[in-house]
Amino acid sequence: MHIITRQEGALNKVAKYFKDQRYWQGEWFNKQKDIDRYNSLVVLGTTPNKADVDAIMANTTWTEFLCDDCHKDAEYLIAFRDGKTVVKVCKRCVVQALRLINKEENKK
Ligand SMILES: [Zn+2]
Image 1 (cartoon, helix red, strand yellow):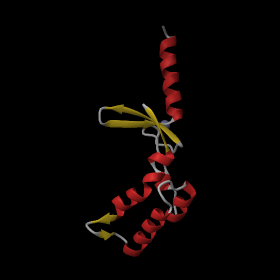
Image 2 (cartoon, rainbow, N blue to C red; image 1 turned 180 degrees about the horizontal axis):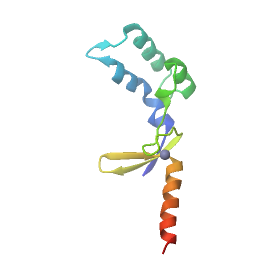
Image 3 (cartoon, helix red, strand yellow; image 1 turned 30 degrees about the vertical axis):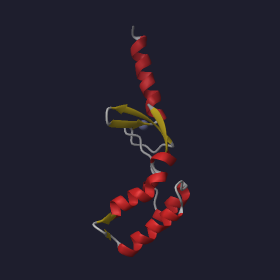
Image 4 (cartoon, protein in one colour; image 1 turned 45 degrees about the horizontal axis):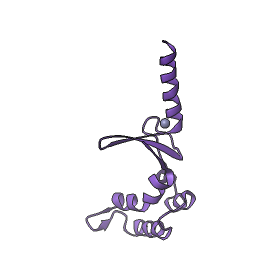
């Protein structure tokens, strides 16, 4: 397992994710608006900050970093790997998992 930060897991990839979703077969879906947004994201560099990305995108969904279990936004997620599958879990869920394990162990 390892820690992934919002910076690594969301912010640094936002320009790529945006292009992956909005650029198809040599065309932008919303030509001028998408090109403007993409160029603005690229100008932020390889480590953009959340406030700048949120301002360009006019919402916070592109910078959300969601736990795979509770689906809440988090600054850090712990990645568990099972072969090629990676599950990313927040601290709150890890703490809850420990409580469940401890409760089970205390039954003995
Ligand atoms: Zn969670």
